Length: 219
Image (cartoon, rainbow, N blue to C red; front, side):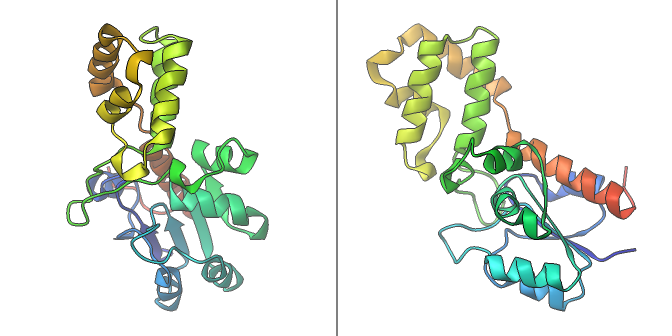
C-alpha cells in the first residue's frame, strides 16, 4: 500500500476522515511540512488545511519538489485548493468546488477560506467566507432571504476581518439593510442549515485519494 500523509484540520475532523481513508493524518501544514513528509517516504500527500498567518504558509517550491520526486500531491478545500489552482499545470491534482472556483477566477482572495480555530481541538472559531457564500445562496434559493438581503449580508461578511466572521456578526454588521424579523429568521435557519463546502470538498478529496490509490477504506 502507498504511504499516504494528509494535512487536515478544521475542514474535517480526523475521526470522520479515518472512516473514508486509511492514512497518516497530520495537523494543518506549515512551511517545510511537505518537505518533511517527502523525506519520510510519502507516496501521496493530501493537502487540505494549512496555516496562513500564524506561521509561514506551504511554499510552492516544496510542492514542486515533491512532484518532481514522483510524489502525488492532491489539494482541496482550503490551502490545498489554493495551491492546486496555482500548480495544477505542474502536476498537482485539485479536487472539489472550491478548487474549481479558484481555478476559474470566481474566487481570488486567500481569505475566502481563512478562519481561526482552536489549535487543540481543531474546532473552527470563525466562519470562512466561502461557506458563508454557499449558505447565503442556499438561503436565497429556499426563500429564507431575498436577493437584496443576500447582497447586504454578503457585503457585511466581506467587510469583516476573517477571524471575526460569524453569522451573528454578519447579521449585526448589515445594519438597517436587514429588518429584525428577517435577521431572526435567517439566523434560526442557519443554525441547522448552514453549508460547509470546505468539509464537502475535504470528503471528496479523501474519496478521490482512496479510489485512485486503491487504498483501503474503513467502514
